[in-house]
Image (cartoon, rainbow, N blue to C red):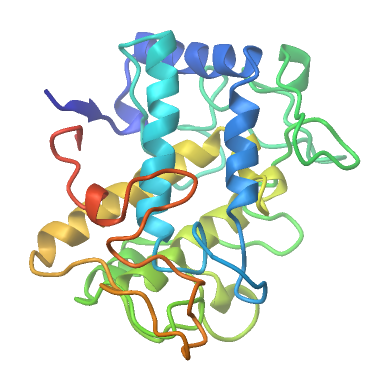
Length: 287
């Protein structure tokens, strides 16, 4: 029987405590950092050679769907009642309130060094970053980007992505001119704020630890990506005939040969394919 992922703003106090408790326990066991490493290992931008699985690629959505499922399974080994909540950033748009509360994700970073000092993921509470650490080992945030303010994506931004009936198009990277995948992932043309849409813009809005391949170090990552996954399910319902593209791997003479995952190919580091996770209604649903 499918379980339900809920809007984080509708969690009960008990559900919030159980979710946070499971994440903290996963961190204590050392398993959380393995998820950070997995994301780093498969974060390959356009300019690098080799396979791109997690970003700037058609498999952005199915790769993260599997990633969230594996994380959720790990949480449920600790507490079977826990499911991933999602944060609808088109509605909960402030730097205070849900999900930036003391009992959930904690708040913004302090002005001096952007260190998060409130909530369960503050360093003093034991949330110490052990992966991809440079100068600091604590969680940082700069909600709204104080030095050059930006806003979160709006419902109109999401609608612009949802209206595209094609999943993805050549050249299958951050420059793809059409396709739901690139519109929702958020690689735009131009410079500055115009080049960050939807998913990407949220990472920029949170700032700090959420910038870059090690963004999983901030538990906000999971709530954000659960909402992106929800948007994919809505797009699938709206465009029922649409499927993941490309259906077949590029030819050897194609510049994307060996660099992207086709619909029937495995998504590293797992054996599942994009086709395997296009329909997850028997596993979970969104409320």
